[in-house]
Length: 352
Image (cartoon, rainbow, N blue to C red; front, side):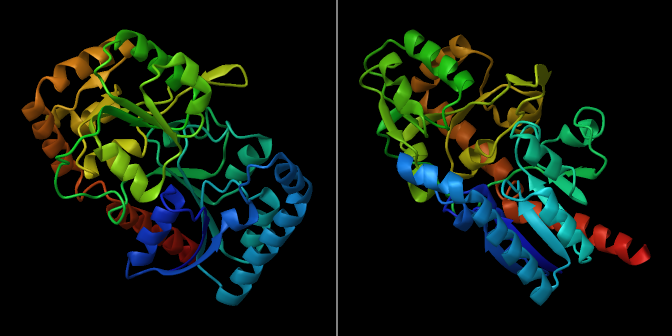
């Protein structure tokens, strides 16, 4: 099976981890195009302005390179990971060349990222979503006519896997997540409840510096962390917090939010003890391991105080969660599911 894969390539990105898992599978012949090569990330306002001006040129060059790779390689599938830089015009061109288009979709709603993205998602032959509720809502809520299948997220065994718990802790509590208003409210409330000066907390992720004045001065806010630094910071805490985005309003209407995230799998594979925001889906994954769940900051603070005083219980829960996750929740295991779906797509194409 030949695949042209399009996605982000920075270390720690879900797209890169998925691409590498596909490449490890013996049945896959993989070519790739780095989406982020055409969307450079810069801090300077001047450079951001220039990027905005030349974006149409980047887009044209990107489209041309995708089409050129398809002409030369004639893959069975163009597979994108979310496809933030992939438009309807490119998808139509690829389809006209006889290549199936597939989007591996990782976010809670395809309608949350602008009209162009919303329209593009509906143009793929197939969407493989990491959200278990998407297939049932695909036509009625999102109004798409294409097909949607579910394959869960997973951990990257080359990046996230550790074979033993950490024995050295710099912090009591660690959370790493890009700042969102819902997370901000949770953590500010938690800070008010955890007013003990001796509890050491690290909150990593882009955007948290703007909330520094609302958080205790002794809390550590390192900013964005990726790759091995991400795992090192997680494992430097006695416990980790796994929050979810559940408050989702799009075009004035409420839509389902996250029931899990990549953290749900990465933390277990990394042998971290974690406290997860409560959903039925995650309870089904880790309920037998005794992973504690929370609905609000008060319940979260109670769990933190309890488990800081019960080291052996933390280690036991982390071990049980790790045993559940490894290897069944790995991206290599998810790729086996994805390949099975794609093989059926090829069989359908042959029959057609």
